[in-house]
Image (tube, helix red, strand yellow):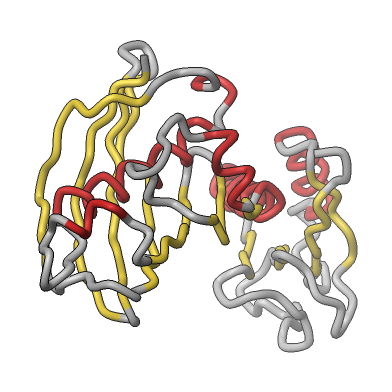
Length: 244
C-alpha cells in the first residue's frame, strides 16, 4: 500500500532501566516496514495499539486508547517481539482486504463471467474481496425461461441451478485474481450440497462464497457457498473448480 498504516504505541513509565522499550519498537519497524508507529493519543482512533511495558506493575495507561476490540497488544519484553510482529501483520492484512473490497454492477459482472442467460445466475455483487469472499445477488424473475419447465404450474428455481449460482459466485471470487484472468472455470466436484428451502418466483437471492483451499500449481480451487432467500438459508454447498 502507498500509505503506511498507523499503529498507536503507549510506553510504561520506564521503571525497569535494563529494558530498552524504544529499541523494541525500532526493531519492529524493520520487521513490518509498512507500518508507522506513533505515540497513542487519547481518543484518537487506531487500527491497533501496542502497550510497551517492562515491569510487573504494568503502569501504562490504556483505557483512553481507541482501538477495535481485540486490537490492543502488550509487549512485556523481547520475547514478545515476534508475536507482536504477527499481530501487526494480521492487522495489516485485514486493512488491505478492506481496501480491496468493492462492488460490481451487472455490466461488470458480464465482463467477468463467461456465462450468459439463461444460465447466468448473478445480477450484481455488493461485496467482493478477490480470492477471499464475495456476496452477490440474483432475482428470480418471470423472464427466467427455465422456470417454464420447472414446473409449468408451480415454478421453482432448480436445486442444480442453486449450486450453479454458488459456483458462479466462486467464479467471480477467482476470476478477479490476476492469475485466473481469462480462464474458464469448470466443475470438478460438489460436496455437502443441501437444499433447505424452496426458491420461488419473485425471490431475491443473496449468494455468498468464500475460499476454502487452493492448489495454484494444479489450477484447482475449493469454495464454500451459501444462498439466502428472505433471510433464510435456502441452499449451501462446497464446489471444486478447475481453472482452465
